[in-house]
Length: 345
View (cartoon, rainbow, N blue to C red):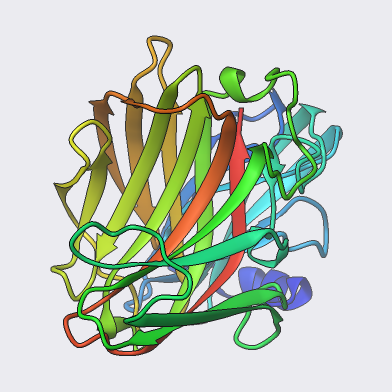
């Protein structure tokens, strides 16, 4: 739960003794970095209920991020300059503790395509939707057995005041709805058309960071979060699927064999509140897909699995996907997305 800074500081003075502390592992104190700045920290407390949430204050009274749990891994877009950043942890007993780190941002850049991050993409426009059904899961719009809708700028429930609401329904079974946004390259919704192919082939590190909240979340066969890069006849699809009704496990996408591969990592999202998901992926120097890590509600699974790209047409682009999968009864459900940030370098 988000708490005003003055209340937080009061709780820190009142209740700090219940905490073991807050530890910031990245960035190093006094480091000079290029934006966005990735903050990694953890905390503990003697409170029986544990840690409730952690937050980042780049400046006094400016809470730029808050997430559930005792582990924090989040990138913040900061302008050039020097910052004394405060990381705060709140526990379920009303206590709080902080740690500080000095950071010099040498190249920050803005959001929305001006720098290395697209921020609040759930409210940016440029999204297209399509249904997919068995056995071949070919895009259709409209479709015979699935329907969908989405709405941007939703202020409740929301963390930013600009969430997006996604609904799906139908007769199924096992029909899906794919939402896609072209970020860089032909059809860019962010004004980055990359006509001379000077951007897309250089990109190699990616982060998908999002909050999601489910209405009837148990009706979802799976929720899918993908990053996609296409250039020089190669297609890199970093597909990540949280199976829910399908078995509470993370799968990743094998581009060559066109199939989902179970990771053995459990996926149990919170049914009663916001979930924070961060995915890290990379294109290696020899053009392989590297699935690096998945962090859900503060719990990180390091995958470090490599796959080959699939040959494609000559299209150049970088895109993001979000997908909702229907169960065997095609039970209707709703998902809210907020603070969707895609970072790249």
